Length: 223
Image 1 (cartoon, helix red, strand yellow):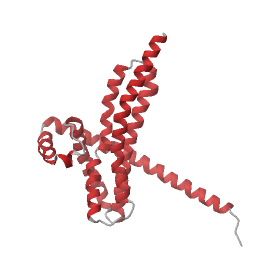
Image 2 (tube, rainbow, N blue to C red):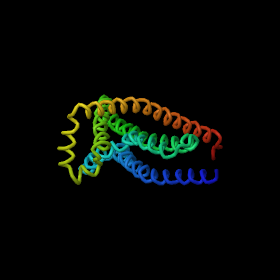
Image 3 (cartoon, rainbow, N blue to C red):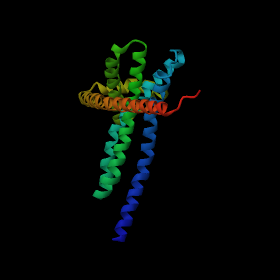
Image 4 (spheres, rainbow, N blue to C red):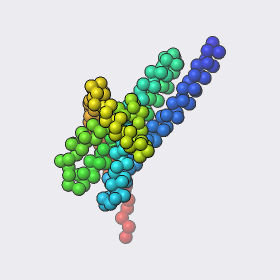
């Protein structure tokens, strides 16, 4: 019994160590567009050449956020390695849910920031179309990353191969079906999580306002 427990713990530690590497890296890539969205769309910067360069980098890295949805395939391999219901239920599944949700939430907030910018410059009617186009581009990016193993750096290091091989490959029937399914998933999940996120921040803002009012009402006037 003790030997089996030791072996199980060793497997769990091994799996966590392996997952920690790619999870940390993929989350780092997912949060790059989030950080850029704050800098580009929330700080009121003018559209200089630096802004446009940041905008291009933003869209180049944005597919990394929803890409985490496809990392669910690693969970299947981990379940095969660790055949303990308790470990899978209490450790692996919550870990994967947390990482995947964090990555997709970065995607959602990035698009919320983009929508905020469009609203600020008087282009509110563009928000839905920009979101749909972004979902389509990210669906292609997710396919390129998962099946062709391209990454965001390849747009700089080997742009010719990305455009030639990438475009040629997605013209097939199977890639188009996969991209279409991915697009539908992104649209649906984004629609749900955007509303949850907006309600959360709206409620948080109300709480902060109410707390501020309470503090002001309880503060005696001076003089």
